[in-house]
Amino acid sequence: MLEELRITGLGVIEDTTLPLTRGMNVITGETGAGKTMVVTGLGLLFGGRADAGRVRADPGRATVEGRLRLSSQTAKAVAARVVDAGAEPDDDGSLLLSRTVTVEGRSRAHVGGRSVPVSLLGEIGEQTVAVHGQSDQLRLLRPAEQRASLDRFAGPEHEKLLTEYRELFTAWRRIEDDLADRRRNARERSQEADLLRLGLDEITRVAPQAGEDEELRTEAQRLEHAEGLRTAATIAHQAISGEDEAADASSLVNTARRSLEAQATLDPLLGELGLRLEEAASLLGDVAVELSAYLASLDADPERLQAIYERRAALRGLTRKYADDVEGVIAWADHAQKRLSELDVSDEALEELDRERQRLAGEVAGAAARLRAARLGAAGQFADKVTVELAGLAMPHSRVQVMVLPRPAGKSEPSLVVDGEEAGITADGADEVELRLLAHPGAPALPLQKGASGGELSRVMLAIEVVFAGAGGPPTLVFDEVDSGVGGQAAVEIGKRLARLARSHQVLVVTHLPQVAAFADRHLVVAKDTGGAITTSGVRVVEETARARELARMLAGLPDSDLGIAHAEELLAVAARERAA
Image 1 (cartoon, rainbow, N blue to C red):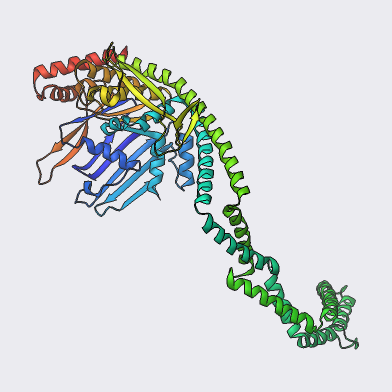
Image 2 (cartoon, one colour):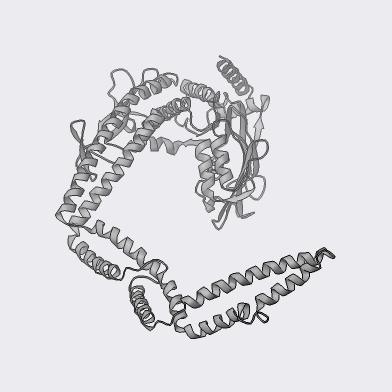
Protein backbone atom coordinates (compact mmCIF):
# COMPACT_ATOMS: atom_id res chain seq x y z
CA MET A 1 0.00 0.00 0.00
CA LEU A 2 1.18 3.55 -0.80
CA GLU A 3 1.00 5.46 2.48
CA GLU A 4 2.19 8.87 1.31
CA LEU A 5 3.07 10.67 -1.90
CA ARG A 6 4.99 13.96 -2.05
CA ILE A 7 5.32 15.91 -5.31
CA THR A 8 7.47 19.01 -5.82
CA GLY A 9 8.16 21.07 -8.94
CA LEU A 10 5.93 19.05 -11.29
CA GLY A 11 3.58 20.96 -13.58
CA VAL A 12 1.35 23.29 -11.58
CA ILE A 13 2.23 21.50 -8.33
CA GLU A 14 4.91 23.40 -6.43
CA ASP A 15 5.05 21.26 -3.29
CA THR A 16 2.29 19.06 -1.92
CA THR A 17 1.87 15.85 0.05
CA LEU A 18 -0.93 13.32 -0.38
CA PRO A 19 -1.66 11.30 2.76
CA LEU A 20 -3.22 8.09 1.52
CA THR A 21 -5.12 5.41 3.37
CA ARG A 22 -6.30 1.87 2.92
CA GLY A 23 -9.50 1.48 0.99
CA MET A 24 -10.69 4.02 -1.54
CA ASN A 25 -8.88 7.34 -2.01
CA VAL A 26 -10.56 9.85 -4.32
CA ILE A 27 -8.85 12.86 -5.92
CA THR A 28 -11.04 15.64 -7.29
CA GLY A 29 -10.60 19.27 -8.33
CA GLU A 30 -11.38 21.86 -10.95
CA THR A 31 -10.34 21.20 -14.53
CA GLY A 32 -6.71 22.28 -14.94
CA ALA A 33 -6.02 22.22 -11.20
CA GLY A 34 -3.43 19.47 -11.55
CA LYS A 35 -5.23 16.18 -10.92
CA THR A 36 -3.39 14.64 -13.86
CA MET A 37 -0.06 15.65 -12.31
CA VAL A 38 -0.80 13.32 -9.41
CA VAL A 39 -1.08 10.38 -11.81
CA THR A 40 1.98 11.64 -13.70
CA GLY A 41 3.88 11.74 -10.42
CA LEU A 42 2.86 8.16 -9.66
CA GLY A 43 4.07 7.13 -13.09
CA LEU A 44 7.46 8.76 -12.46
CA LEU A 45 7.77 7.20 -9.02
CA PHE A 46 7.31 3.75 -10.49
CA GLY A 47 9.73 4.05 -13.39
CA GLY A 48 7.68 5.83 -16.05
CA ARG A 49 9.25 7.89 -18.82
CA ALA A 50 10.43 11.32 -17.66
CA ASP A 51 9.13 14.39 -19.52
CA ALA A 52 11.39 17.38 -18.85
CA GLY A 53 8.68 19.67 -20.26
CA ARG A 54 6.59 19.10 -17.10
CA VAL A 55 9.37 20.24 -14.74
CA ARG A 56 8.88 23.69 -13.23
CA ALA A 57 11.61 26.19 -14.17
CA ASP A 58 11.96 27.09 -10.50
CA PRO A 59 13.54 25.09 -8.78
CA GLY A 60 14.57 23.41 -12.05
CA ARG A 61 13.80 19.87 -10.97
CA ALA A 62 10.77 17.77 -10.13
CA THR A 63 10.86 15.28 -7.27
CA VAL A 64 8.36 12.57 -6.41
CA GLU A 65 8.74 10.68 -3.14
CA GLY A 66 6.61 7.87 -1.82
CA ARG A 67 6.42 5.62 1.20
CA LEU A 68 5.36 2.11 0.25
CA ARG A 69 4.08 -0.31 2.88
CA LEU A 70 4.79 -3.80 1.57
CA SER A 71 1.86 -6.18 1.98
CA SER A 72 2.24 -9.85 2.77
CA GLN A 73 1.59 -10.82 -0.87
CA THR A 74 4.34 -8.67 -2.36
CA ALA A 75 6.73 -8.06 0.55
CA LYS A 76 8.96 -11.08 -0.02
CA ALA A 77 9.53 -10.64 -3.75
CA VAL A 78 9.95 -6.85 -3.62
CA ALA A 79 12.18 -6.92 -0.54
CA ALA A 80 14.43 -9.57 -2.12
CA ARG A 81 14.83 -7.48 -5.30
CA VAL A 82 15.53 -4.34 -3.27
CA VAL A 83 18.20 -6.10 -1.20
CA ASP A 84 19.78 -7.44 -4.41
CA ALA A 85 20.12 -3.83 -5.56
CA GLY A 86 21.96 -2.89 -2.34
CA ALA A 87 19.07 -1.09 -0.62
CA GLU A 88 16.97 -2.10 2.39
CA PRO A 89 13.42 -1.50 3.63
CA ASP A 90 13.03 0.43 6.88
CA ASP A 91 12.74 -1.45 10.16
CA ASP A 92 8.95 -0.99 10.14
CA GLY A 93 8.68 -2.71 6.76
CA SER A 94 8.08 0.43 4.72
CA LEU A 95 10.11 1.34 1.66
CA LEU A 96 11.08 4.88 0.68
CA LEU A 97 11.12 5.58 -3.07
CA SER A 98 12.27 8.73 -4.82
CA ARG A 99 12.56 9.96 -8.41
CA THR A 100 14.06 13.27 -9.52
CA VAL A 101 13.90 14.79 -13.01
CA THR A 102 15.72 18.00 -14.02
CA VAL A 103 14.75 20.55 -16.67
CA GLU A 104 17.63 19.15 -18.76
CA GLY A 105 15.95 15.74 -18.72
CA ARG A 106 18.37 13.99 -16.35
CA SER A 107 16.70 11.48 -14.07
CA ARG A 108 17.79 9.85 -10.81
CA ALA A 109 16.13 7.20 -8.67
CA HIS A 110 16.58 6.20 -5.03
CA VAL A 111 15.22 3.26 -3.06
CA GLY A 112 15.75 3.01 0.67
CA GLY A 113 18.09 6.01 0.50
CA ARG A 114 20.42 4.39 -2.07
CA SER A 115 20.86 5.43 -5.68
CA VAL A 116 19.47 2.73 -8.01
CA PRO A 117 18.65 2.36 -11.72
CA VAL A 118 15.25 3.74 -12.73
CA SER A 119 14.40 0.26 -13.98
CA LEU A 120 14.28 -0.96 -10.36
CA LEU A 121 11.41 1.47 -9.67
CA GLY A 122 9.65 -0.06 -12.66
CA GLU A 123 10.14 -3.58 -11.29
CA ILE A 124 8.73 -2.54 -7.91
CA GLY A 125 5.80 -0.82 -9.62
CA GLU A 126 4.90 -3.93 -11.65
CA GLN A 127 4.34 -5.87 -8.44
CA THR A 128 2.70 -3.17 -6.34
CA VAL A 129 0.74 -0.67 -8.48
CA ALA A 130 -1.49 -0.92 -11.57
CA VAL A 131 -2.43 2.38 -13.24
CA HIS A 132 -5.50 2.52 -15.49
CA GLY A 133 -6.40 5.56 -17.52
CA GLN A 134 -8.32 6.49 -20.64
CA SER A 135 -5.36 5.34 -22.70
CA ASP A 136 -5.89 1.87 -21.22
CA GLN A 137 -9.39 1.88 -22.69
CA LEU A 138 -7.93 2.49 -26.13
CA ARG A 139 -5.37 -0.24 -25.52
CA LEU A 140 -8.16 -2.63 -24.60
CA LEU A 141 -9.47 -2.25 -28.14
CA ARG A 142 -6.34 -3.87 -29.59
CA PRO A 143 -6.65 -7.60 -30.30
CA ALA A 144 -3.25 -8.29 -28.72
CA GLU A 145 -4.36 -6.63 -25.48
CA GLN A 146 -7.60 -8.61 -25.46
CA ARG A 147 -5.65 -11.85 -25.87
CA ALA A 148 -3.28 -10.78 -23.09
CA SER A 149 -6.25 -10.02 -20.83
CA LEU A 150 -7.66 -13.52 -21.37
CA ASP A 151 -4.26 -15.12 -20.80
CA ARG A 152 -3.85 -13.14 -17.59
CA PHE A 153 -7.27 -14.22 -16.35
CA ALA A 154 -6.57 -17.91 -17.12
CA GLY A 155 -4.02 -18.07 -14.29
CA PRO A 156 -0.66 -19.71 -13.50
CA GLU A 157 -1.30 -23.06 -15.22
CA HIS A 158 -2.18 -21.28 -18.43
CA GLU A 159 0.94 -19.14 -18.08
CA LYS A 160 2.97 -22.33 -17.85
CA LEU A 161 1.35 -23.63 -21.05
CA LEU A 162 2.11 -20.32 -22.77
CA THR A 163 5.75 -20.43 -21.65
CA GLU A 164 6.21 -23.99 -22.90
CA TYR A 165 4.61 -23.06 -26.22
CA ARG A 166 6.88 -20.04 -26.67
CA GLU A 167 10.00 -22.11 -25.99
CA LEU A 168 8.95 -24.60 -28.68
CA PHE A 169 8.00 -21.79 -31.07
CA THR A 170 11.39 -20.11 -30.61
CA ALA A 171 13.27 -23.39 -31.26
CA TRP A 172 11.15 -24.09 -34.36
CA ARG A 173 11.68 -20.60 -35.80
CA ARG A 174 15.43 -20.86 -35.14
CA ILE A 175 15.59 -24.11 -37.14
CA GLU A 176 13.38 -22.62 -39.88
CA ASP A 177 15.62 -19.57 -40.20
CA ASP A 178 18.80 -21.66 -40.13
CA LEU A 179 17.55 -24.01 -42.85
CA ALA A 180 16.39 -21.11 -45.05
CA ASP A 181 19.70 -19.30 -44.59
CA ARG A 182 21.72 -22.40 -45.50
CA ARG A 183 19.73 -22.87 -48.69
CA ARG A 184 19.79 -19.20 -49.61
CA ASN A 185 23.49 -18.63 -48.92
CA ALA A 186 24.93 -22.04 -49.82
CA ARG A 187 27.79 -20.61 -51.92
CA GLU A 188 28.94 -18.10 -49.28
CA ARG A 189 28.71 -20.75 -46.56
CA SER A 190 30.78 -23.19 -48.63
CA GLN A 191 33.49 -20.57 -49.16
CA GLU A 192 33.61 -19.74 -45.45
CA ALA A 193 33.72 -23.45 -44.59
CA ASP A 194 36.68 -23.99 -46.94
CA LEU A 195 38.66 -21.23 -45.24
CA LEU A 196 37.88 -22.63 -41.80
CA ARG A 197 38.97 -26.13 -42.87
CA LEU A 198 42.30 -24.77 -44.14
CA GLY A 199 42.91 -23.13 -40.79
CA LEU A 200 41.87 -26.22 -38.86
CA ASP A 201 44.14 -28.44 -40.97
CA GLU A 202 47.11 -26.18 -40.25
CA ILE A 203 46.39 -26.09 -36.53
CA THR A 204 45.82 -29.85 -36.41
CA ARG A 205 49.20 -30.50 -38.03
CA VAL A 206 50.98 -28.41 -35.41
CA ALA A 207 48.73 -29.69 -32.57
CA PRO A 208 49.48 -26.90 -30.05
CA GLN A 209 49.06 -27.64 -26.34
CA ALA A 210 47.91 -25.17 -23.70
CA GLY A 211 50.92 -23.57 -21.95
CA GLU A 212 53.37 -25.19 -24.37
CA ASP A 213 54.96 -21.96 -25.61
CA GLU A 214 55.99 -20.88 -22.09
CA GLU A 215 57.41 -24.33 -21.28
CA LEU A 216 59.47 -24.32 -24.49
CA ARG A 217 60.77 -20.83 -23.80
CA THR A 218 61.97 -21.89 -20.34
CA GLU A 219 63.61 -25.07 -21.64
CA ALA A 220 65.35 -23.21 -24.49
CA GLN A 221 66.75 -20.69 -22.03
CA ARG A 222 68.23 -23.48 -19.91
CA LEU A 223 69.81 -25.20 -22.91
CA GLU A 224 71.23 -21.93 -24.26
CA HIS A 225 72.95 -21.16 -20.94
CA ALA A 226 73.75 -24.72 -19.85
CA GLU A 227 77.46 -24.09 -19.11
CA GLY A 228 76.87 -21.04 -16.93
CA LEU A 229 74.09 -22.82 -15.05
CA ARG A 230 76.29 -25.89 -14.50
CA THR A 231 79.12 -23.77 -13.10
CA ALA A 232 76.82 -21.94 -10.70
CA ALA A 233 75.21 -25.16 -9.48
CA THR A 234 78.58 -26.92 -9.05
CA ILE A 235 80.08 -24.10 -6.96
CA ALA A 236 76.97 -23.99 -4.80
CA HIS A 237 76.93 -27.78 -4.34
CA GLN A 238 80.64 -27.86 -3.31
CA ALA A 239 80.11 -24.97 -0.90
CA ILE A 240 77.32 -26.84 0.85
CA SER A 241 78.69 -30.38 0.84
CA GLY A 242 82.19 -30.34 -0.72
CA GLU A 243 84.91 -32.96 -0.15
CA ASP A 244 86.61 -30.81 2.45
CA GLU A 245 84.26 -31.46 5.38
CA ALA A 246 85.95 -28.82 7.56
CA ALA A 247 85.18 -26.10 5.06
CA ASP A 248 81.75 -26.95 3.61
CA ALA A 249 78.61 -25.26 4.92
CA SER A 250 76.96 -28.42 6.20
CA SER A 251 79.98 -29.36 8.33
CA LEU A 252 80.29 -25.86 9.77
CA VAL A 253 76.60 -25.73 10.70
CA ASN A 254 76.76 -29.17 12.34
CA THR A 255 79.87 -28.12 14.32
CA ALA A 256 78.03 -25.02 15.58
CA ARG A 257 74.97 -27.11 16.51
CA ARG A 258 76.99 -29.63 18.52
CA SER A 259 78.78 -26.83 20.37
CA LEU A 260 75.50 -25.25 21.43
CA GLU A 261 73.86 -28.53 22.41
CA ALA A 262 76.80 -29.30 24.73
CA GLN A 263 75.89 -26.24 26.82
CA ALA A 264 72.12 -26.45 26.48
CA THR A 265 71.71 -27.82 30.01
CA LEU A 266 73.23 -24.61 31.40
CA ASP A 267 71.18 -22.18 29.29
CA PRO A 268 67.96 -23.30 27.52
CA LEU A 269 68.35 -20.43 25.03
CA LEU A 270 71.40 -22.13 23.53
CA GLY A 271 69.34 -25.31 23.21
CA GLU A 272 66.68 -23.45 21.22
CA LEU A 273 69.34 -21.98 18.92
CA GLY A 274 70.79 -25.44 18.50
CA LEU A 275 67.44 -26.74 17.32
CA ARG A 276 67.25 -23.97 14.74
CA LEU A 277 70.71 -24.88 13.48
CA GLU A 278 69.57 -28.47 13.20
CA GLU A 279 66.75 -27.28 10.94
CA ALA A 280 69.24 -25.27 8.89
CA ALA A 281 71.46 -28.33 8.49
CA SER A 282 68.50 -30.38 7.28
CA LEU A 283 67.56 -27.63 4.78
CA LEU A 284 71.15 -27.49 3.49
CA GLY A 285 71.08 -31.26 3.01
CA ASP A 286 67.87 -31.00 0.95
CA VAL A 287 69.33 -28.25 -1.23
CA ALA A 288 72.49 -30.34 -1.78
CA VAL A 289 70.40 -33.29 -2.99
CA GLU A 290 68.37 -31.09 -5.34
CA LEU A 291 71.51 -29.44 -6.74
CA SER A 292 72.96 -32.88 -7.41
CA ALA A 293 69.85 -33.91 -9.29
CA TYR A 294 69.86 -30.61 -11.20
CA LEU A 295 73.46 -31.16 -12.32
CA ALA A 296 72.62 -34.67 -13.45
CA SER A 297 69.70 -33.41 -15.56
CA LEU A 298 71.55 -30.45 -17.05
CA ASP A 299 72.72 -31.35 -20.52
CA ALA A 300 73.74 -29.13 -23.43
CA ASP A 301 71.85 -30.92 -26.20
CA PRO A 302 72.18 -29.04 -29.53
CA GLU A 303 69.68 -31.30 -31.27
CA ARG A 304 67.04 -30.75 -28.59
CA LEU A 305 67.65 -27.00 -28.73
CA GLN A 306 67.21 -27.00 -32.52
CA ALA A 307 63.96 -28.96 -32.17
CA ILE A 308 62.69 -26.40 -29.67
CA TYR A 309 63.54 -23.53 -32.05
CA GLU A 310 61.60 -25.24 -34.83
CA ARG A 311 58.60 -25.96 -32.58
CA ARG A 312 58.44 -22.37 -31.34
CA ALA A 313 58.63 -21.11 -34.92
CA ALA A 314 55.65 -23.29 -35.84
CA LEU A 315 53.67 -21.95 -32.87
CA ARG A 316 54.55 -18.35 -33.83
CA GLY A 317 53.21 -19.07 -37.30
CA LEU A 318 49.86 -19.97 -35.77
CA THR A 319 49.73 -17.00 -33.42
CA ARG A 320 50.46 -14.61 -36.30
CA LYS A 321 47.38 -15.87 -38.17
CA TYR A 322 44.78 -16.89 -35.62
CA ALA A 323 45.31 -15.37 -32.16
CA ASP A 324 47.73 -13.61 -29.83
CA ASP A 325 48.81 -16.75 -27.98
CA VAL A 326 48.55 -20.54 -28.08
CA GLU A 327 45.44 -20.59 -25.86
CA GLY A 328 43.76 -18.21 -28.32
CA VAL A 329 44.70 -20.47 -31.24
CA ILE A 330 43.12 -23.46 -29.48
CA ALA A 331 39.97 -21.41 -28.78
CA TRP A 332 39.84 -20.35 -32.45
CA ALA A 333 40.00 -23.97 -33.51
CA ASP A 334 37.15 -24.91 -31.14
CA HIS A 335 35.01 -22.06 -32.48
CA ALA A 336 35.85 -22.97 -36.09
CA GLN A 337 34.80 -26.57 -35.45
CA LYS A 338 31.41 -25.44 -34.13
CA ARG A 339 30.98 -22.95 -36.94
CA LEU A 340 31.67 -25.65 -39.52
CA SER A 341 28.69 -27.61 -38.26
CA GLU A 342 26.55 -24.50 -38.74
CA LEU A 343 27.86 -23.95 -42.25
CA ASP A 344 27.27 -27.48 -43.46
CA VAL A 345 25.16 -27.31 -46.63
CA SER A 346 25.54 -30.93 -47.65
CA ASP A 347 22.40 -32.82 -48.63
CA GLU A 348 22.71 -34.94 -45.50
CA ALA A 349 22.90 -31.90 -43.21
CA LEU A 350 19.96 -30.19 -44.91
CA GLU A 351 17.86 -33.33 -44.72
CA GLU A 352 18.62 -33.73 -41.01
CA LEU A 353 17.70 -30.09 -40.35
CA ASP A 354 14.49 -30.50 -42.32
CA ARG A 355 13.52 -33.54 -40.24
CA GLU A 356 14.15 -31.58 -37.06
CA ARG A 357 12.11 -28.68 -38.43
CA GLN A 358 9.16 -30.95 -39.17
CA ARG A 359 9.40 -32.58 -35.74
CA LEU A 360 9.38 -29.20 -33.99
CA ALA A 361 6.56 -27.95 -36.22
CA GLY A 362 4.44 -30.87 -35.06
CA GLU A 363 5.23 -30.10 -31.40
CA VAL A 364 4.44 -26.41 -31.91
CA ALA A 365 1.11 -27.27 -33.53
CA GLY A 366 0.27 -29.59 -30.63
CA ALA A 367 1.21 -26.95 -28.05
CA ALA A 368 -0.84 -24.33 -29.96
CA ALA A 369 -3.85 -26.69 -29.87
CA ARG A 370 -3.48 -27.15 -26.09
CA LEU A 371 -3.16 -23.39 -25.67
CA ARG A 372 -6.32 -22.86 -27.74
CA ALA A 373 -8.25 -25.38 -25.66
CA ALA A 374 -7.15 -23.62 -22.47
CA ARG A 375 -8.19 -20.25 -23.88
CA LEU A 376 -11.57 -21.59 -24.91
CA GLY A 377 -12.08 -22.94 -21.41
CA ALA A 378 -11.12 -19.64 -19.82
CA ALA A 379 -13.09 -17.53 -22.31
CA GLY A 380 -16.50 -18.68 -21.08
CA GLN A 381 -15.62 -18.05 -17.44
CA PHE A 382 -14.09 -14.68 -18.25
CA ALA A 383 -17.14 -13.58 -20.26
CA ASP A 384 -19.56 -14.71 -17.53
CA LYS A 385 -17.71 -12.89 -14.76
CA VAL A 386 -17.40 -9.65 -16.74
CA THR A 387 -21.08 -9.84 -17.70
CA VAL A 388 -22.06 -10.19 -14.03
CA GLU A 389 -20.04 -7.09 -13.21
CA LEU A 390 -21.63 -5.16 -16.08
CA ALA A 391 -25.05 -5.91 -14.62
CA GLY A 392 -23.91 -4.19 -11.46
CA LEU A 393 -22.62 -1.23 -13.48
CA ALA A 394 -26.06 -0.25 -14.82
CA MET A 395 -25.71 -2.40 -17.94
CA PRO A 396 -28.08 -5.20 -16.86
CA HIS A 397 -29.00 -6.30 -20.38
CA SER A 398 -25.48 -6.26 -21.83
CA ARG A 399 -23.37 -9.32 -22.33
CA VAL A 400 -19.72 -9.78 -23.15
CA GLN A 401 -18.53 -12.58 -25.40
CA VAL A 402 -14.91 -13.66 -25.65
CA MET A 403 -14.26 -15.19 -29.06
CA VAL A 404 -11.21 -17.42 -29.56
CA LEU A 405 -10.77 -17.83 -33.32
CA PRO A 406 -8.05 -19.39 -35.49
CA ARG A 407 -5.67 -16.76 -36.76
CA PRO A 408 -6.14 -16.43 -40.54
CA ALA A 409 -3.29 -17.93 -42.55
CA GLY A 410 -1.59 -16.05 -45.35
CA LYS A 411 -0.38 -13.06 -43.37
CA SER A 412 3.31 -12.22 -42.94
CA GLU A 413 3.78 -14.85 -40.23
CA PRO A 414 4.19 -18.59 -40.92
CA SER A 415 1.28 -21.00 -40.71
CA LEU A 416 0.69 -24.52 -39.38
CA VAL A 417 -2.22 -26.93 -39.27
CA VAL A 418 -3.71 -26.65 -35.76
CA ASP A 419 -6.73 -28.77 -34.83
CA GLY A 420 -7.09 -29.79 -38.47
CA GLU A 421 -7.20 -26.21 -39.79
CA GLU A 422 -4.40 -24.10 -41.20
CA ALA A 423 -3.76 -21.03 -39.06
CA GLY A 424 -1.24 -18.25 -38.86
CA ILE A 425 1.09 -18.79 -35.95
CA THR A 426 3.00 -16.32 -33.77
CA ALA A 427 4.82 -16.32 -30.47
CA ASP A 428 1.39 -15.93 -28.78
CA GLY A 429 -0.18 -18.96 -30.42
CA ALA A 430 -2.47 -19.61 -33.39
CA ASP A 431 -5.46 -17.68 -32.02
CA GLU A 432 -7.09 -14.30 -32.30
CA VAL A 433 -9.04 -13.23 -29.24
CA GLU A 434 -11.83 -10.70 -29.61
CA LEU A 435 -14.06 -9.18 -26.94
CA ARG A 436 -17.57 -8.54 -28.25
CA LEU A 437 -20.41 -6.63 -26.63
CA LEU A 438 -24.12 -7.37 -26.93
CA ALA A 439 -25.46 -4.00 -25.80
CA HIS A 440 -29.05 -5.30 -25.34
CA PRO A 441 -31.15 -8.39 -26.12
CA GLY A 442 -31.50 -8.90 -29.84
CA ALA A 443 -28.51 -6.69 -30.66
CA PRO A 444 -25.68 -8.22 -32.67
CA ALA A 445 -22.46 -9.09 -30.89
CA LEU A 446 -20.05 -6.41 -32.08
CA PRO A 447 -16.35 -5.93 -31.36
CA LEU A 448 -15.75 -3.47 -28.52
CA GLN A 449 -14.39 -0.80 -30.84
CA LYS A 450 -17.65 -0.88 -32.82
CA GLY A 451 -20.26 -1.83 -30.24
CA ALA A 452 -19.29 0.20 -27.16
CA SER A 453 -19.68 3.92 -26.51
CA GLY A 454 -17.12 5.79 -24.42
CA GLY A 455 -19.12 5.32 -21.24
CA GLU A 456 -19.77 1.65 -21.96
CA LEU A 457 -16.10 1.07 -22.69
CA SER A 458 -15.20 2.64 -19.33
CA ARG A 459 -17.53 0.25 -17.57
CA VAL A 460 -16.30 -2.79 -19.50
CA MET A 461 -12.74 -1.93 -18.52
CA LEU A 462 -13.72 -1.44 -14.88
CA ALA A 463 -15.62 -4.76 -14.93
CA ILE A 464 -12.53 -6.50 -16.28
CA GLU A 465 -10.39 -4.92 -13.57
CA VAL A 466 -12.83 -6.06 -10.88
CA VAL A 467 -12.61 -9.60 -12.26
CA PHE A 468 -8.79 -9.40 -12.31
CA ALA A 469 -8.72 -8.07 -8.76
CA GLY A 470 -10.54 -11.15 -7.58
CA ALA A 471 -7.70 -13.25 -8.99
CA GLY A 472 -4.94 -11.28 -7.24
CA GLY A 473 -2.73 -8.74 -8.97
CA PRO A 474 -1.03 -5.61 -7.57
CA PRO A 475 -2.35 -4.44 -4.20
CA THR A 476 -2.73 -0.79 -5.29
CA LEU A 477 -5.01 0.15 -8.21
CA VAL A 478 -5.07 3.64 -9.74
CA PHE A 479 -7.96 4.79 -11.96
CA ASP A 480 -7.49 8.04 -13.87
CA GLU A 481 -10.92 9.32 -14.97
CA VAL A 482 -12.00 5.93 -16.27
CA ASP A 483 -15.55 7.09 -15.56
CA SER A 484 -15.39 9.59 -18.41
CA GLY A 485 -18.63 9.68 -20.39
CA VAL A 486 -20.65 8.13 -17.54
CA GLY A 487 -23.32 9.73 -15.40
CA GLY A 488 -26.51 9.14 -13.43
CA GLN A 489 -27.17 5.69 -12.03
CA ALA A 490 -24.20 4.22 -13.91
CA ALA A 491 -21.92 6.61 -12.01
CA VAL A 492 -23.33 5.40 -8.69
CA GLU A 493 -22.74 1.80 -9.73
CA ILE A 494 -19.14 2.61 -10.66
CA GLY A 495 -18.68 4.10 -7.22
CA LYS A 496 -20.07 0.91 -5.67
CA ARG A 497 -17.71 -1.29 -7.69
CA LEU A 498 -14.69 0.83 -6.81
CA ALA A 499 -15.70 0.68 -3.16
CA ARG A 500 -15.97 -3.10 -3.45
CA LEU A 501 -12.48 -3.24 -4.96
CA ALA A 502 -11.26 -1.16 -2.03
CA ARG A 503 -12.16 -3.95 0.41
CA SER A 504 -9.23 -6.02 -0.83
CA HIS A 505 -7.07 -3.37 -2.55
CA GLN A 506 -5.92 0.15 -2.04
CA VAL A 507 -7.76 2.15 -4.72
CA LEU A 508 -6.82 5.65 -5.95
CA VAL A 509 -9.42 7.31 -8.19
CA VAL A 510 -9.11 10.57 -10.08
CA THR A 511 -12.70 11.50 -10.93
CA HIS A 512 -15.03 14.33 -11.89
CA LEU A 513 -18.14 12.44 -10.74
CA PRO A 514 -19.61 13.26 -7.31
CA GLN A 515 -21.43 9.90 -7.33
CA VAL A 516 -18.03 8.17 -7.38
CA ALA A 517 -16.31 10.58 -4.96
CA ALA A 518 -19.04 10.00 -2.38
CA PHE A 519 -17.86 6.42 -1.85
CA ALA A 520 -14.33 7.41 -0.82
CA ASP A 521 -12.71 6.47 2.47
CA ARG A 522 -10.48 9.54 2.00
CA HIS A 523 -11.28 12.49 -0.22
CA LEU A 524 -8.42 14.70 -1.48
CA VAL A 525 -8.97 17.91 -3.41
CA VAL A 526 -6.46 19.47 -5.78
CA ALA A 527 -6.92 23.24 -5.55
CA LYS A 528 -5.35 25.86 -7.81
CA ASP A 529 -3.93 29.10 -6.45
CA THR A 530 -3.77 31.94 -8.97
CA GLY A 531 -3.07 34.70 -6.46
CA GLY A 532 0.67 34.90 -7.11
CA ALA A 533 2.75 35.62 -10.17
CA ILE A 534 2.84 31.89 -10.98
CA THR A 535 -0.13 29.52 -10.81
CA THR A 536 0.39 26.68 -8.32
CA SER A 537 -1.71 23.82 -7.00
CA GLY A 538 -1.84 21.96 -3.71
CA VAL A 539 -3.73 19.00 -2.26
CA ARG A 540 -5.79 18.94 0.91
CA VAL A 541 -7.91 16.34 2.67
CA VAL A 542 -11.59 17.31 3.00
CA GLU A 543 -13.97 15.92 5.58
CA GLU A 544 -17.54 16.50 6.74
CA THR A 545 -18.70 20.01 5.74
CA ALA A 546 -15.73 20.71 3.48
CA ARG A 547 -16.33 17.42 1.70
CA ALA A 548 -20.02 18.19 1.22
CA ARG A 549 -19.07 21.57 -0.27
CA GLU A 550 -16.65 19.90 -2.70
CA LEU A 551 -19.36 17.44 -3.80
CA ALA A 552 -21.77 20.36 -4.18
CA ARG A 553 -19.25 22.07 -6.45
CA MET A 554 -18.96 18.87 -8.51
CA LEU A 555 -22.75 18.53 -8.68
CA ALA A 556 -23.69 22.07 -9.65
CA GLY A 557 -20.58 24.23 -9.64
CA LEU A 558 -21.86 26.03 -6.51
CA PRO A 559 -19.96 24.98 -3.37
CA ASP A 560 -21.86 27.42 -1.13
CA SER A 561 -25.35 26.57 -2.33
CA ASP A 562 -27.53 25.29 0.50
CA LEU A 563 -29.45 23.13 -1.95
CA GLY A 564 -26.24 21.78 -3.44
CA ILE A 565 -24.80 20.97 -0.01
CA ALA A 566 -28.03 19.25 0.99
CA HIS A 567 -27.89 17.16 -2.16
CA ALA A 568 -24.22 16.33 -1.48
CA GLU A 569 -25.00 15.26 2.09
CA GLU A 570 -27.80 13.05 0.80
CA LEU A 571 -25.37 11.50 -1.70
CA LEU A 572 -22.86 10.84 1.09
CA ALA A 573 -25.56 9.19 3.18
CA VAL A 574 -26.61 6.96 0.28
CA ALA A 575 -22.98 5.97 -0.34
CA ALA A 576 -22.48 5.20 3.34
CA ARG A 577 -25.54 2.94 3.38
CA GLU A 578 -24.43 1.19 0.20
CA ARG A 579 -20.95 0.60 1.57
CA ALA A 580 -22.33 -0.75 4.81
CA ALA A 581 -24.61 -3.11 2.90
